[in-house]
Image (cartoon, rainbow over all chains, first blue to last red; front, side, top):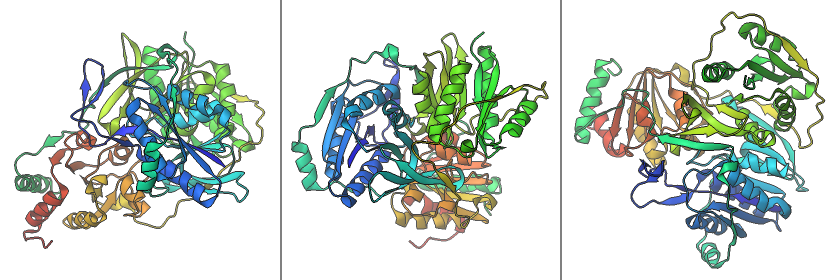
Length: 259
Length: 328
């Protein structure tokens, strides 16, 4: 069984961000800290769980981005993935999902993966597109928002449950090869083992230079970014914590929201 | 005249979902700057009556494909059938709900149609540079505007972004029952497993106190619970990370994959305010947010914003509200 997991590096979600007028893109203020996208951590964990249950399974991990992003591939190897690959791009602002998915699909095309896992979306761009577009390139089954998986005994099918509206689930068997996008809550991602992490740090990753991607071929372009508009008054209380608590109590009493 | 603006009608076995009426609004807004016909496509089993009803109500011509294999949503069959139908219609825009279905098939369908795909759209703007669609990035801290570069653009609309359109009593429009050969799915098919009906009903609560990832530790739920007790008819709820962590049961989840609520007061504690959560609480009367991150997106959707550590602020508030010192 060969499993392929797509992972992405994202900025820490509490990182202060602003808009860089020069580049017209988001800027992470201070010294940016990056980590693995949470949905992708769950995808790596799911792959490693399958590997542990089915001896002989190999888990490959891939990421796309500038040099700094290889840290998430090594982390995935620390969690138990076997091999890492890195499609190296230049540091840039908005990256089109079609470009990322095209590069991943080109890498995966001849490798005969049985199962491809990706996060349901990235925490930064929140599009949820890369997984489904990779599946479309490879012409394999695709199931998004997966919250449960169980591989069949012969490893030819996978039983999946995917989240739909109102707490319902769509459930059933999907023939492999298939691509699943993974929702958080499916498992609890493990911390990387130190020994594995050290080993991963000494391993060579398969580094592939991204095609001098032609932005003209991208089906959509970034037209700009802006801070979101307020949909309510957004009055910030000031003073010490105790003063704020007093003010809040007055406000809620005025509105008869508290006795 | 540009290619038509096509709405994909979302329904559950013939019962049209409300998200579809927001798609009508989106199509009408696009048409203001982009004169084109509006049409609709509906896939399902014995779907003709549903198609007739939709076209009669909205005056929108409908292309319908009816087949027993389309009774429930199937990604593979939807993609296959829609690729054929849309290739024939040559639409300029395709309006799809950003639901569990739409977000599932739209990106792959876009690749097959060589179309653009803008996901989770929340708004649009027309100006000198043409039409642009806005969507949340970075957990809702930033809005990005995207501009399609292709002849056809697929849009998935974040539910709750637009007011549902009202029927204008238009003239009856045609229904075209399309003959398409639908094969059995190669990859397999899924069936729907209903939700567990047990659990708490958030819709009855007058006050909801919500916990988000920012509470940090499970032990801090006690603090949220104690805050909730200060209010009559109050219930504690949570955002997705809290439910994912197993700290609260699913019935307490507020947001797009959980409950949609409209209490008189909503107090968000350590909730970041991603669009998936905001969709569930838009109907609240008054919103108070407490978060240590001054840039949290939740503040834009709040009446009162408090930048404080929950573990400091909540005990102080409880002490004041209850008129006595809280025991730790």
